[in-house]
Amino acid sequence: MSDGDAAAAVVARELAARPCEARTAFLKQLLAHAAAGLVLVEGERAAGESVYRLADAMVARGAA
Image (cartoon, rainbow, N blue to C red):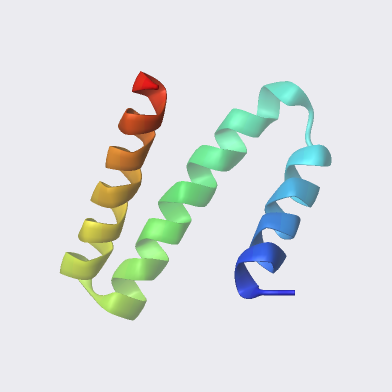
């Protein structure tokens, strides 16, 4: 199992354990903590680029 698959499995398990109305807040907190972790590991500029690319991908996906 790759790291990406393992991470996806953790997120899927955590989402399944929460009621529907709590899932959005969980995902928002997960994104915030992941971005903060990237700042610590890669620095502010690299983390900002990662978050920017994520947002860009989300906008592109929404337009499809």
